[in-house]
Image (cartoon, rainbow, N blue to C red):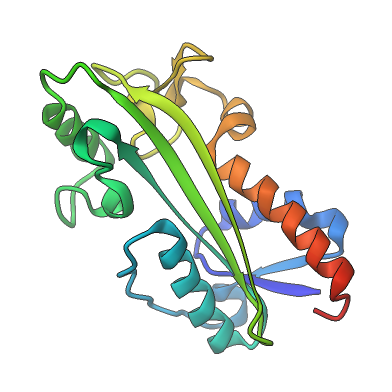
Length: 200
């Protein structure tokens, strides 16, 4: 069964394909289908944004579409940057500029607890939807550490690992990350769905 992944990111395709391969699922990207859907992510939650993207790509392709949305929620900032994580501080900022802005916003804060969250949604042409979520809890470091990863990884400290995301290997991060947790939950949901709906 063929699914389209609502992304231009080849790494996301490889990651999802590895998780779903034994379910008999083939993952293709928008680019491989010759479509590009520009979706305004105006939802107030990660789940809403993932559903918006999945629905739009499903309608454009006629195939079941999988989309995700992720972000960092800092508790002392009322959950910000949240759904605005990729746009925090405005368009055009680099990853480093965003996390340094975040560190300034937390200056003097003793509560530095935070969590990363990912929502995954699959929209089927028959109107069905599957959704899954994943979280990873941690705190915001006082200064960046590590060179791996991207985004806020250098300042997101995972207590159990005693490292930031940017200090973990890709494998170590995938084992505990919000995205990894969400994709594993989605795989379980999709496996159950396909058993009940073998034709999709």
